[in-house]
Length: 351
Image 1 (cartoon, rainbow, N blue to C red):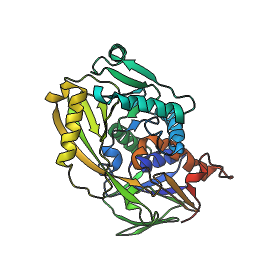
Image 2 (cartoon, one colour; image 1 turned 135 degrees about the horizontal axis):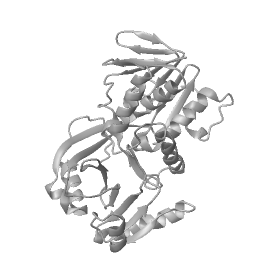
Image 3 (tube, rainbow, N blue to C red; image 1 turned 60 degrees about the horizontal axis):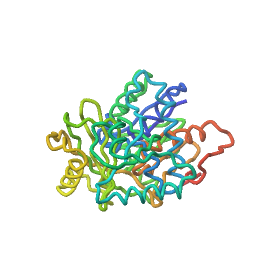
């Protein structure tokens, strides 16, 4: 079987990798086959289903399944260091501790058996010695993915499996069995539309949500788990990477603006990071990024199925959290004759 995949971001690579494992011949199309223009490249890669409990219940349910699915997928890689599942920590400034209490109340109300621990200053130090806070919540079912490392490993796996890469091409349309670029049209047994914000012709309610992040080199900071700061104006996250690098982010702007990060975002992100750990004062800014995350009207993911074509979109801010569940649903559509879905609300059977 021959598959054409439009879009070489996270979802496109995962589909290509799974099909290659099953013996398919795979061709990927993208303007930037390295994935550096994808939302996945900029993402912190948080696996935080509890953080998304206020979204639709389906997001929490899919997210909890996805955390387990990532563990299973990691076993198929020689290098699984891209996956960290040691939990995450949620904290707040002393004046904002009521936000932690509100979060606990919401978790207990909305989740049948929420799994968390309330930490004081001593137990925070026991769990995360480098973190400076007096009160926090530990969510031991959460974690993070090193997004860039995973994208690189998937590229290596695909190249080794003989996948073909159509680089620096603009896909103009994806229709059953056909991927069209500005130069040519290509025929396949199945095509997969994973173009994110570029897939307007298959998702009429698609919109872009801008996210901004800063990557810091901070050798004076010793944090090993993702940390989220609850704040009246924003929700900051700090995600550690190897070699004392940290990804700092929070912003979510309804915009398709791809320009550089704003001064306001820089000031808020850096000030908030410093308030969590004073070691960030001497950190070095090594990169700032802005990326567009694809979202649909209901802020839920959607899979469109037609014979010869599957399109997936709307991963919004849940990309790494939901990707393996969507991968499983796509596999089900291809191989399950009855097409019985665990999440039928996200499946659409035609355009």
